Amino acid sequence: MPRYDYIIAGAGAAGLSLLTRMIACGKFSDKKILIIDKAAKTVNDRTWCFWEKEQGFFEDIVYCSWDCLLFRSDSISSSLNMGDYRYKMIRGIDFYEKCFSIIKQQPNVDIRYGDLQFVHQEGTQSRMFIDNVELLIADAVVFNSISCNPRSDKNTLKLMQHFKGWIIETNDKVFDTSAGTLMDFRVHQNHGTSFVYVMPLAANRALVEYTLFTEQLLAANEYDRELSDYIARFIDIKQYSISEVEYGIIPMTNARFPFYQNGIYNIGTAGGQTKASTGYTFQFIQKQSRQIVELLSNNQPLQNIVASPARFHFYDSVLLQLLTQKKPGGKEIFTRLFQRNKASAIFKFLDNETSVPEELAIISTLQMGAFAKAAIQQLT
Image (cartoon, rainbow, N blue to C red; front, side, top):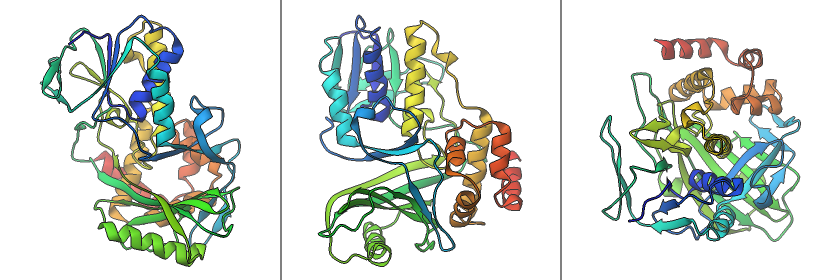
């Protein structure tokens, strides 16, 4: 096999974001680059939603955006104060098509598909195989976005954010396209923290997604039953068609994901870029990709990458502790969070961009006794 300067394992959000930013930078055209994935990306297998103030790197493929979001629970139904933020949606297929249309124009970039395996031996350079054929990686900078085993200890918590979404279409114009529903907690909490997320794409078309933060998955028919029940009870429509279906599982864990390990740089979820307490990933990937390209462009070591302050990992751990214990439940925690704080302040906090005084102002509005006990559990 040929030798490469850069190898990117995984052509998902992290791998493709990094590579397209490297190409856009213009400083890597003389470098040989390889990107690898199991198979070509040809279907709309997911959507990414995120909040953002400014125009983003992938602004031209934003499918829909909203400057108004709603939060609903048994006790409140409110329009969130988003400040300068907009909530945006990017479809997977649009993202893949944009990235590969750019990549395929680069003569220095190779794309390979096949079964990818790493062999890690502690303290030594990892080995990498494609369809059981070893790839020469000793002289390459290797980025991996394929799931790996994080470091765990006695306080490690593991939940899953799992969801099933339908894009439904109706004959009548029943959706208000100016506002999406970020969380609707009016559904039962028998399985644990559960809510529905509704994003109107047109007056007669919307994404309706049933989401849970729990340790166990549901049977396939349970997601369908909950979606049907929500649409009938809370959207109050009986006749609709399902044009698309999406299902996903996102890890929610405070385990440590090393950025560098055995000669490999981990990016995306594999590198700890999934927010443990919410599952949001896309914007953290963009921050990390931007930093990596800046460092590489300036011939600076990637060890100089700026990580989020450690206190945010602690905050995530405390919330995961409470979501695991279910006392108080996620419904009660998130209801109080959005009832007593501006959404713009919450978004900044969840982006790991707040100051300590701003964080204390938010934390002080929550169930302080329960949070204090969970904090002690995580510290001992």
